[in-house]
Image 1 (spheres, rainbow over the protein chains, first blue to last red):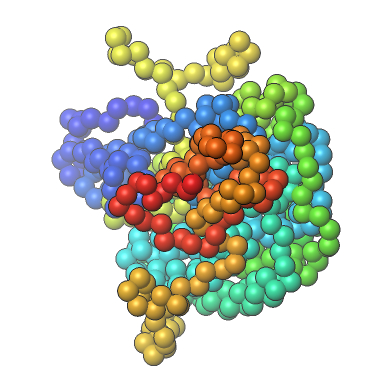
Image 2 (tube, each protein chain N blue to C red):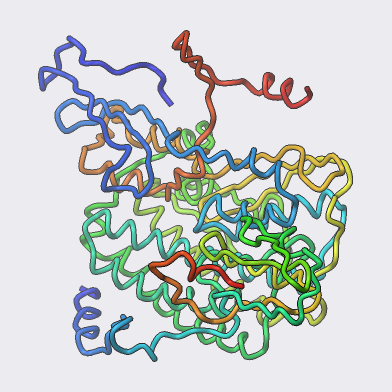
Amino acid sequence: MQKEEFQRTEKKSAYELFFDMPVGPQHPALKEPAFFKFKVEGERVIGVDADVSYNHRGIEKALEYRNYIQNIYLIERICGICNVAHTLCYAQAVEQLHGKEIPPRANYIRLMIEELARIHSHALWLGVAAHEIGFDTLFMYVWRDREVVMDIIEMLTGNRVTTAINTIGGVRRDVSDEAKYKVKKGMDILEERLKYYRNVALNDPTVNARCSDVGILKPRDAIRLCAVGPTLRASGVKNDVRLDDPYTLHDEVPFNIVTCDTMDVLGRVVVRVDEMLESVNMVRYCLEHMPNGDVKIKLSLSPPVGEAISRVEAPRGELIHYARSNGTKNPERYKVRTPTFGNIPAVCDMLTSKGDYEVNIADIPITLASIDPCFSCTARMEFRDVSKSKTWVWSLEELKAHCKK
Amino acid sequence: MSMLKEIQRSLFKKRATVLYPFKERERVHIPDGLRGKISFDRDKCTGCLLCSRFCPSGACEIVTDEKGKRPVFHLELCLFCSQCQEVCPKGAINLTEEFELAAFDRKAFTIK
């Protein structure tokens, strides 16, 4: 993020002047509050300053006042769409504190629900992206077919979006044979439709005209700016928590890491559609190889003293949870690092014209949407002394010192 | 071009949406095990208070009646996570498949 304040400068350009163009906090591209201040020269965007702290909910502090079971449902509400990734990450962190392994059947169900949630998140994004480029026909069709996976999730967990399936020590519901058959049938429909959407993304002239060579993020920049998830993979970098640090059963269930070397928004569309196809195959593998047995082990309500870090590949990228227990019923400290937070420097880079690469104002919505932003997850706290009109943010060392107090 | 074919095909297909709530109420598919409105059986309840201890949103208030302690559920605060159903040792709490819960009166949200 560039910290300098953009102001109307006296420097002459082809268009006489540079202007600041505010976008947000409420604007048509995104449904969540985020503020972007663009520095524009005519139609060209030459700089961007982002402010995402409009929705600070104090969840990390609230977690310290609830017990470990209540926290599952609070963690789930950090992000509605990636709620499975959040509860999975939380459950893994607490199980790590306990030092216990969960039954294999529970692992299979967890992985299956995680991949189903990935399909529904990516399908939602594909629809939103189609809407941003003004292709509402595609948006309607994608969301119609998304209902297939939504119905499957509702059948397996009891709710369409907030699944509440993962719990400490396993999962809360078993998968019946009848449900397995329905999932298998749903996967067949989805696979056919997803292949069709892949074809649309690659061959449709509207999608190509609006998405190719827009929002370029070079591999070097992607690594330098710590991009995560499909944003990083669309720049041709093979990086996925499921491969690098396998959790649940990702070391057992075969899957391919999808990358794309076009580095633009079209690449991100293709990567997400291909990931959905990979997820369909993983769900099928889980259905076939699911062993019989328990789905839950009973764990004590207060884990032993210790620290745990757990990583999960959420649909938007790498998700990190840190938990510290002091042996009581409430966690002493809990920290969440969401993928959108990691992608904001990258999106600021995508939105800045440099050299031959030009960003137009009309490309702003789709470029912003291409990282699949979820700004409610990202708000961080800063300190403000009103009497002295001074604002500051704590560094890592200061935070560590505060935690040790 | 493939999109045009798809549009043409969709023109003659059945509508994907449902005219809920005025018509086609029966086409709304409600799966078994949907987490909906809470039902509470006073006779089974022993007043162990586990439901209120694990309720994440404070929707479960404990009151005392002639038989002893018991929960009262406030659906306007409820998250429908079914944790109370899971911890209840006597099976007194059940989440039914009823999901049409809008009301003008707050009293309609209190389950006694």
